[in-house]
Image (cartoon, rainbow, N blue to C red; front, side, top):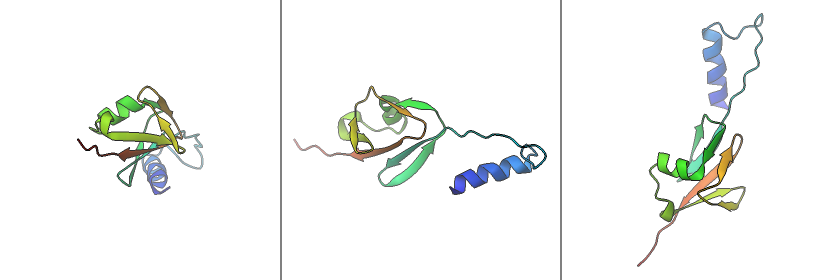
Length: 92
């Protein structure tokens, strides 16, 4: 991923990652797709309710999917997950 390369380059610039100083780098990320745009969250765990609130999405007008499975607001996303948020419209 291009963003991963950017992180590595920044670490190299800071002298934190060199051939003589090998490090193990662990990046915790959850990938989110909202309205076709992918975003990455630098976290190990996040509740769907928190995710929707963070992006100012009304939970009554959106669906959250992980691997095609519908998620409820009280479920957690974990590092490595890809979550698709689909906005819905309601007619009255």
